[in-house]
Length: 451
Image (cartoon, rainbow, N blue to C red):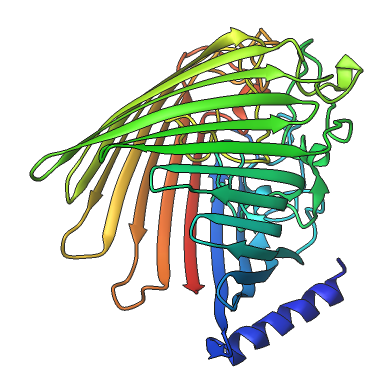
């Protein structure tokens, strides 16, 4: 989509949203869907010669949801992006020879010098009743392994069909059939296979630079989910994420709450199995994304406690099996309990992760502060088949603050500081440090919504 068309659509939705904030006439109801987001991000490597980077990006989604009669709705939204100011994100780090990993994802990774662009992000038609619904077109998604991953200027969105059926208050069945995706950090709508590898590709199983980007064949993505309430305290969730010609991931979890007079204890257990499908993306193993012979298992558990002010939980994940557990970083964040924002643990044959979380909500002011502390034991960096990204075992600390003014409910602020350090005091190569450890990473995010 060229810039003139993008800018014209942007102005159209702006005028539409202002002129018709709400309208109800002859069974037609128009609800605005406006989201302004500004995001400051910077990464530094204290005491080293690596390239530091920074960026201030902004995005504005203008759209609306139009409800027609009783059961039909149409949703449209166009998002415009701008790079307000940044370092030269498109330049490689002179020490490691690697490209920027974090700040570049705010904008269009495939056209990093483009300072203004846009895309038609949402365009869907839906029909729903009390127990059944179906939606067709471009839409958001929040499944276990394909999700919005709210860490940049825009979410990952998909194009296809979504249907759900809830025969009663206990059961819900849902599914997606996806033919194209627009990942965060991209202005384009791409086929499923075309999205794989836009983010860093890491190493092949032989230890060479992976080359599956542009060489991965996958025509569609299917997701099937089942949710079941068990009594008043527990719920069961199952999903199967089937990436045609790549892999199939099965995921099962159960969570229970045990409320007391002033506090609640939470318990959760997850388990997953993944195996390769077809030729793993390409008949030529040097271009292959997933080894068809891979068989991987993951287990994850959580124990938590909360009251009116505190939320705490301790989480443990163990990944094992044969081959790498893979899920494209373009598609979403990890489903296991030990996920911490700004890092993922996919691409490894074995992982042991222990993560603690604590959040406190102040009583007098609308402020929440929180902290993650995670220790992640990964395979030996010399074993390329087991460690795709040449990543050392590491410790990660996230400190965050959220603020929502009481008199401005549509506005919120979020600040995050991230520090990642290697667990072992051994000499690491530049490629094992840059974008990985020995770093301080800052995020400052402002959101304003009208919907």
